[in-house]
Amino acid sequence: MSNPLGQFRTSNSMVEDVISLPPTYVPGFLAGCVDLDVDISDRALQGLPKRTIGIVGFSRSKLSFPSQLVLANKLPPIFFLCFPSNNLKGFGKIFIGAAAGGHSQLESKFLQNIALVVNPVATTAVSIEIDGHVVNLNPSLLSIDKNGNGGTKISTVTPWTELHSFLYKPFVQDFVKKAAGRRMKRVASEAPFDACFDSSTIENSVTGLVVPVIDLVLAGGVEWSIHGANSMVMAGKNVACLAFVNGGMKAKLSSVETSIIEGHQLEDNLLVIDEASSRLSFSSSLLLRNVTCSHV
Image (cartoon, rainbow, N blue to C red; front, side, top):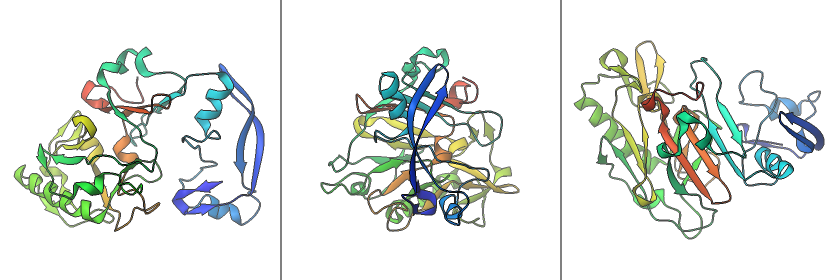
């Protein structure tokens, strides 16, 4: 069992069980277990939300949750994830072995596609734009070199997107400049965030607070747009902060990635992962289409 949030791993035990998710039925489902009667259980669940009793893994491994369901039911190796916002108004969606095209409000025409790569592999550089302005940073930090270092990972381990220090500092500086142009009043920082603002000086819209739009410009010019609902977080009374954090000189989980797109930035964004085609499709904010992950 692995808890990346608590930097904890154990080879305690592997069990075989039956999982039933109608109409799917999987006998011989493999899972790792930790004895909750021993002290090790506290470390195994360290850093996870209260009432958490387990971790579901989504990876290329044949032991991952979707892989076992796909293999047992001879389904296509494709799944899509849609995480709800943290306003407690509903649940998200996980579909395994099916694409989004069968859902009228999640038509594939809304999705953009990029290739998934298996490290180590060299890739070209991408860029970050704020309100259409290219942030002046070292593009090589956003690419993957021949040794497999660099690049961006999608993760739900922690809420806030992490950037390498050399990416984070110019990114925040440019955001603050664009925010000043919108007459957003800056206030004292609220840990772990650096750029915080008086929310009463910011308008609201269907996509959250009206703040500078962040675009992740990916291979082929594909853009992942991040609006206020995903870029900002309320950190106190009338205090809205840029929900990105400084990952230091190394990424939090390893020394490989230089940026990690985390949970808050994924809320109400549809992600479709097609392992057979090694392709990631994404929608950007569904709020732009008056749809949420809780109501699709």
